Length: 445
Ligand code: GDP
Image (tube, rainbow, N blue to C red; front, side, top):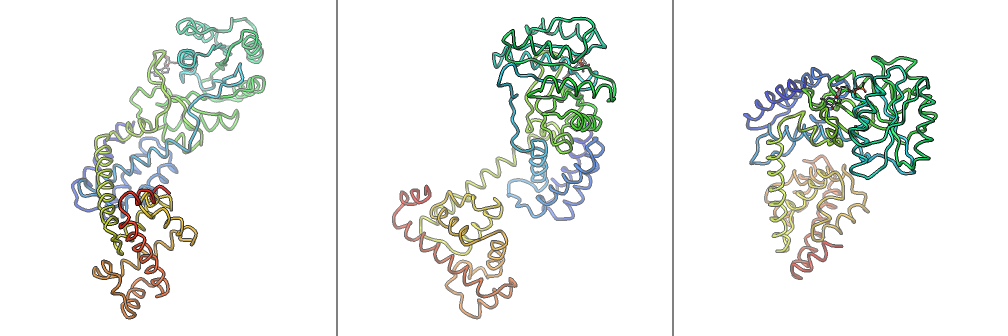
């Protein structure tokens, strides 16, 4: 399903790649196609819509560096946004298994790969974290499923709770807890029964088990190939049982991440692991970067743009450093700095890393210099002629009036800007005389 998305996006970007400049219409047209492609790949409508909105905002008017095409720039923006959607905010990527024995509840539909995943995770905990793990199957309806877990346990060298016929799921859960405590296990994993579809009986049972076990982690296992269905299943389970994370299986198949994209956005639950095959070590922690790469399938372009941006930033910084060392700081320099601040979205920009800039950033913050104020200042500088920018001393009353009017602002605001530039230039001159060492020292403050 994502093969298709990647192909379609490829076409869209190809067309952009061949154009010289990126206009708003180009972006809008491209994004319309991106949206359709996402929907066809079974990404939910609100997620696709939100995604396209964000990318459009970022792509329109984005600075395009010389060595890359606008199309390539858009690829990078789409890529970064994909990562953001997939990643969520600072989730824990390790399982919470302190306070032994820590219960982990495994839930999901039948055939999702729940039992396989239980054994895979148990093996991982044993091999990588040297944990003693006990697994128990709670699938009282399917003796074969219980057998399956026992066999997998033997395969990976993890103990399973002996099977006792006639017990209910809750009874097995209690026995697992007891055995885990007495046996000195670090973790016990409860592989709950799955059904083909979500039904009341199943949910009641899982809830009852949850109440007995009080799990530290409740992991939902879903088939990554089922796209939107996987997201619906996750929403259901989270509503009824409460889940702490998702494991997407069959990510080795043709599905290229469609479910992953909606999963995080719709459920708000982190994807913790992905299953990548039938073998017992075919599981990995979820890596948003890698999945975004698979969805887009354009790693080369992304790498190219990253490189170009790096080079450009270094070049710019070096050029400015040289000017500052000579004690030069005109309106162009100030504009550059202000735009950096806008781009970085705040005062913690690279300004803080430049000589004298740290101080200025602090002053600016204290003076309540917000995004709006920065916008005004940039508008004022834009309203100046080339000559005026290079030499602000030219600005007398009539010129000031013209500039302020051009930006639709007061002369008072322009005066504040001039004062700021003067202070900066003075600082630069002083620092320039003191030499490079003093500049670095200042930068460290
Ligand atoms: P359960 O009914 O949810 O417990 O599902 P099983 O664990 O029995 O898995 C069903 C089938 O899916 C088995 O044949 C597994 O080997 C297979 N399977 C599980 N996870 C993956 C995966 O990540 N990739 C692939 N290709 N197959 C998987």
